[in-house]
Image (cartoon, rainbow, N blue to C red; front, side, top):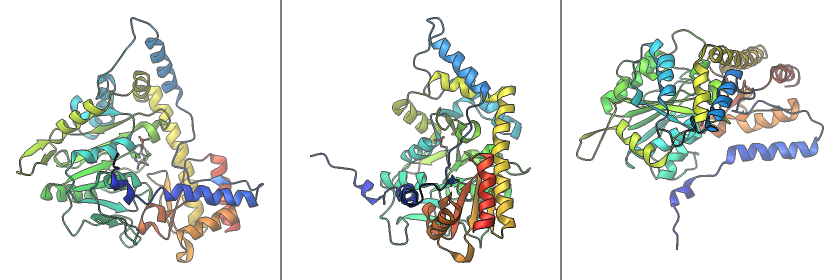
Length: 409
Ligand SMILES: *Cc1c(COP(=O)(O)O)cnc(C)c1O
């Protein structure tokens, strides 16, 4: 008899998006002509930049000729891509990296989910609340947590509430934690941390020999000067942090799949005797065993993001989405809403009026304005009373949505 991994039984099921779909479908049945605008999606809508498409086509042609065909590539990715990542994304910010500290992958979702397997099951993890659910669920599956309780939280996880009281920024944990997941710019709140705020976390991790798992998937959406783009801009972070980056939101790769993870050689984890081991070596061992690399045409396409034309086109994409973000943010503020994010991230996190529950607000927004967003409660207990709108829609729909909120809500 094949026994199951019973940790999976602790998961409450993907309630959020199935519940959203259920409510939309039943609304549509009663209102077949309603023109619904979706501002709930966390996916890009614009096509790949032309420079990327051109590079991918050329790489496919190379694969068709015996002289230039490529089979298995290096599991950690091709040097031509790692080199450009280092030169372009890190060197200009004063961060020096070696080639073997960069690991190319097919996505940050999987990297953030897989990385936990390098850690012992007795580690205590800390996550912000609200949170990107992947960090939590992957640790539940591995058996690093207790059961799901009636507060809507897992036992043995330290939740760091991000609320209006602390300006949506997590306070340091009061008890010792070993693995800390931070995502900045944040999904879902759209907030960032300053260098000083991030340094508190790096200092905490150095004092407690914890590891920070830093998700920078939205780094390219940072508009303001002085906001750190990489945790490695913070002194000492090379000893205690890993950083996840992705081409998904930066260059429209959500369906193309390419990301990378930075694991500095200086990061150490400890065995039960207290002896230190290189996290970089562990991740290399893991990837070379369980992963065979990203396809050559996709890596060639990703490298084109760093050419001058690629950079220009990617900036245009991001400007387009960030223009939507400011339309949403300004429009909501004019309509009297309290709003977070939308300045350095494609997410707008609004406080529901009159302390309305986030599902109730979902229903009202759908029924009165025919707009779909994401209830904050779906991202954690502290998300109750908040609501997420995204800037990934078309300009036309974004403008129409704000007009409807002003006139119908
Ligand atoms: C979209 C997103 C990612 C990127 O995931 P990919 O697997 O690279 O597409 C990572 N982290 C967060 C928080 C995200 O929202």
